[in-house]
Every structure is written in structure tokens, then in C-alpha cells.
Length: 342
Image (cartoon, rainbow, N blue to C red):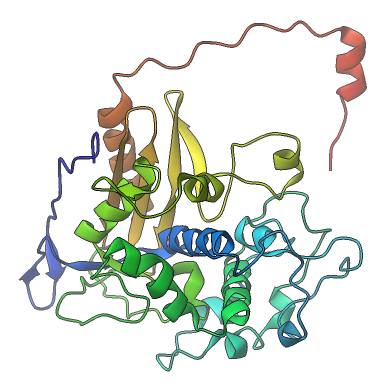
């Protein structure tokens, strides 16, 4: 997408190697953790609608048995921390990664299968440490605030307003789903029914992802119509719950949306891995451009090469930011800061 215009929408290769079925431009792909951008937008929208308070502690008797926080009296876990990965949790444990039950059990049950995997190992709100399990818990907090399932909330507050007709949390029709493959690009990988759908379960088409991309580029507008307030988009992009964020650093992981630089140009977005699919969504406000890439094989080097080429195409001609002025520091100050940090 360049200047709010789709300049390329294209697919290459096969949707199904066994059937020798060519890929079509309306194919459905698994987007992995790019799903977190949808969950983050859902949470920010629900806060805008006064349905949830992201900075409030998630103390709720109905969450008993889903997580542990030894510092709950002085440093309670908040929904914002769960979404910004600053609750002190580590990532999923092996049984959670291996879980793939097509029965699609509700979050209130799956969160109680391995609660030991969600323990704050340091006081929440210090720094970010990536945790897919945190997104499962955050999704359940949103459910408890409304009495509606995560899938229903996502459709009502995100998918329907954006008219994303091909975007689903539950498995789509197999006739349109592109098959995912292992590192060799040949061995098919079965559909992964994640234990917590809010972290990586979304399936979508290129056309729908283009609309989602344009929404962020246009600060909540689509085709000249306001869909979300610009302040909701800003909140999704902005980390608030870490020590660094509280000291004014806005570069980092927001609500399912993180930042990086290409040649000094700031990008926002997310990457995704869905067992057989690797994806990347990114956009920059510098010239209102962005992209969504997805490959149907577990080949990270390939996707990273594509990402570099596309980002170079979009912003390689832009001037990088000016170098900051040199700030001399006294030796005494440097000596005071020198040592081992743990």
C-alpha cells in the first residue's frame, strides 16, 4: 500500500501441493501473531467504549486458577501489561505449544490447564518479555468485562466495522485456505488449533489485510470514513506499562503493535508464525505506506529477505533523520554508570 493506494496485490505458487492447486489472490492465509494487532485494537476500542480499563488491576475472583503473581499486593497485573508483555510472564510451555484441539475449548477452560506457565517471575510493569499466554489471559479479561466470547467481541468491535468479510478466528472453508508447509516447503503441517485464540488464531485474505493496513496508515479512517478515533490507533502503537515507557520512551511494544527502524525510518507492525505460515505486517507514517507479506513455509530467512526488499522499495529513497548533536559526558559520570548490570 502506497499513499493509501493498493499498488500490489499478488500471490505466487501453489495453494495445495498434493492437489497441484494454484494459489489465487482471494486465498485465505493464517497470519499467526499478527493476530495480536487485532486483539490490541479490540482492547483499545473497548476501553474507548468504557467497557474495560486497561490500566486497572485484573483482580477478579473468576480468574482464580489462571495465573499467579507473588507481588499482587504492591504490583498487580493489569490488562495493559498482559497486552504489552510486561506482566512478568514467560512464554508458553511445551504442552501449550503442542495443544491443538479442534473442539475449540473456551478460554476459561484452557487457561486453567497449565496455570503454572503464567506466573509473574518479577514485579509486573518493569520491562517487556514476550508471552503468548498473556494474550490468552487478556482475551479472557475482555470476555469477563462483557459476558461475550472473544470471537464475538472481535467480530462486533473490529471485523464488522472494518467490513473484513474473509477474516475469521475459527477455521475457514478448506477450499480457500492455503496449505502450510514445513521448512522444506513440501511437508504439509496440519491446521494448528491454538490453546489461546487471541494470540495467533486469525485467518485472513490479502484484500482484508490491505484494509486493516490502510486503517493504521490513515489513523482510523477508511475511504474517508472514520471507523476508529485516531487516539485509539495511537494507544495501540504506544507502550505505557514498562519502566522505559513511564520514563517517556515511546519506542517499543504497545497493544499488539511494535516498532523498528529501516534506514532510520520508523515502522510499526507485527510478525506472525502459525505452524506452516510466516507473515509480516508493517506500515510507516513517514510516507503513508506499508505492506503485508505471508509465505506458506517455515522459512524465516526467506521472509526476512522479502521484508528487507519491500521496506527498501517503500522508504529507501527517503532521507534518514538528522544525527543527534554530540553530548559530551564527564569521565566521573561514565565511571559511575560503568559496571555489571543484572
